[in-house]
Amino acid sequence: MLELPSLIFMLVYWALIDSVDPCIFALFVSILISASLMNIRHVVKIGSTFIISTFLGYLAFGALLRFLAGGLPRWLLGLATLSYGLVMLVNTLKSKETDTQLFVCREDNLPCRIINTLKLDKVSRAEVLPTATLGVIASFTLLPCSAGLYILFNIVMIEYGFLTWLLLSLLYVAVFETPLILILLFFVGFSRTKRVNEVLMSKQKAIKVIGSLTMITVSIYILATNI
Image (tube, rainbow, N blue to C red; front, top):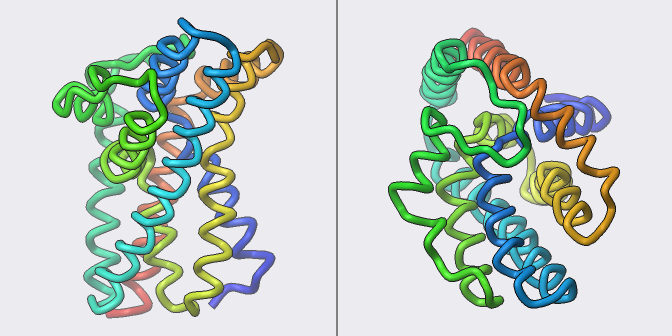
């Protein structure tokens, strides 16, 4: 088991990699654009609603994953994450050159296909309840498909107690939500935050490759220590 400082470093590193996904950004921006038809206060209310609902939804997804995976053999979990990491790596390397525009959702991106299949971008986003509902749906469908490291994080955390998992998961999801907070700040007038997201987008493909290689490496370690 890792010591607490190592765990915190690991989860912050993984959460930052996991958080970079233009499809999530594109969906969030479309929500903010709809809200901006009224006023800035409404933008803040709707944007905050989406961020809070995805925060709680992603935390609930992690709890469900921990519950479902808790009774499975570790070697099987390692094999599953290894397979997922290999698929993600191949898809990333095969994808076209990354678009560095902030809010572009490419059709060859899995979360974008989920958005189109579920027609999430057609859901009414001008009010709090539809926005909160959309945030929860996104937590269980879109967010886990970013880099997949939250799935790996919850598998690694199975051997730790519930309280440790809960506190570290809160930190993980908070770090994961950082780009959405920056987008909201940009929309309400903090233009300097745009540059941060532009840098993230310009390195998107490299970040995805690093995430996939991280998942593969940790999965091999899990297999090697549990077979």
